[in-house]
Image 1 (cartoon, rainbow over the protein chains, first blue to last red):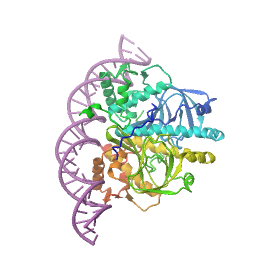
Image 2 (image 1 turned 30 degrees about the horizontal axis):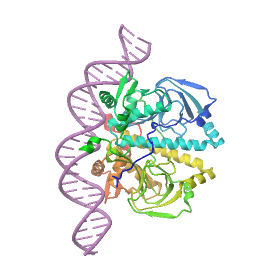
Image 3 (image 1 turned 135 degrees about the vertical axis):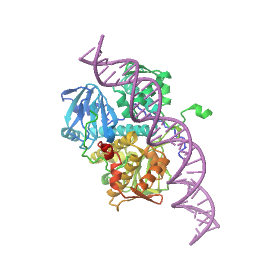
Image 4 (image 1 turned 60 degrees about the vertical axis):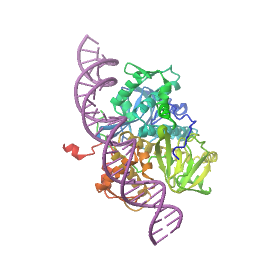
Length: 244
Length: 244
DNA sequence: CGATATGTTGAGGCTTATCAACGGTAGTGG
DNA sequence: CCACTACCGTTGATAAGCCTCAACATATCG
């Protein structure tokens, strides 16, 4: 039964990483239109896990990481938060995760109560928020699949595709991606170690799939290889195994 | 910076497993009030990953598993779906996962279009749906933490606590939990193998933390041990390691 | 141009997966 | 009601993949 072949026509790998923020939505962002812009340096913490959730943020510039901690110093990066996204709109009062600036970031802030009041005052925003949350759930499910069953190589390929597709959605030029976050954040996002991420990147470079320029820039040379090695879909991956 | 001690006062381990269904909500369930009850045997598939999403379901009785498949026969159980929950309300049109009966189940079905029409006709349901989705996201994040960083033992302890707390929420008697699903489903839910789940259960039995009666029944003898070994929270786990 | 944080590479070990066989439970049919 | 059978679960041996620890290289910033 589980062996039944399912062809999934739906493009569920939209390149959206799994994060705890609302994706680009002009309508939701309009709620921040008249708020002043704040600037924060890299490694600033916008809010801590367990803090009272007093504000909602629109990210104007820069990248944040959303972090949950557990015993033994272990850390999980639940997702990243990019410009145009809204952060903190969803969850219950004590924050369930920290939000930390990876780069210099600029954000607009709005009081949580007034945010919700405004939301109620404009009923057309309800469906927008619901649609947004559904997209979030979709991304979260993809991430669960990655963390539960993908190999290190598949995780890194998936991550690189997410990054590439995100930029493509922004109509940025070709296959050159700028990785805003350090290897440790990538590792904690993919459920790996820094070293393993590094080794996989080295292997992909050896294979000519990607090339690395500097610390933050990666050029994708063979998109197809990344896609076949991202492990998505439930059908055959390796032709070699069929031949055997 | 990551070493900062965070005490998280919020009880984010509410025992809700991570699933793709809406939690018990009288208001949402009212949408199914006049639908006939359907019965399905164990291992029936309600819908397949990739199918058009034509219906929304209320689970009246029994347990379902929500499954995503990937290459190489690998499988991930995204979550389980229990009586009183609503399934299929959230996602985009092609289903992102299959829903399969673990036990005999009875459900009420409603056409997706009429479900959404009714939702629009009753604006008071919007916030209910949003709150529900937020709870789902919370559970999904917890599951990501589990899959990314927890040990096999922590995963199994977390699962057992989820089961126990779910029953407690239903005001069922004490520490005896009925596990509806086979080991393989538990394994695919926890990102482990059947064998590892079995071995951890054996070890917990040896330690006197639980005892196993038959295939489906587990008695929790030391709740506290489960809680300290579930790995939640970011502070010290083992006193021994402090002593050393 | 130098100092420090970040990233890479290597050796070895541990947790968990894999493969295989056995045991038990529960459901079925006589 | 009991025995048979098939599935499910357990246990063991082995191995693979990733982690850990450590040293080294390279960017980036002052």
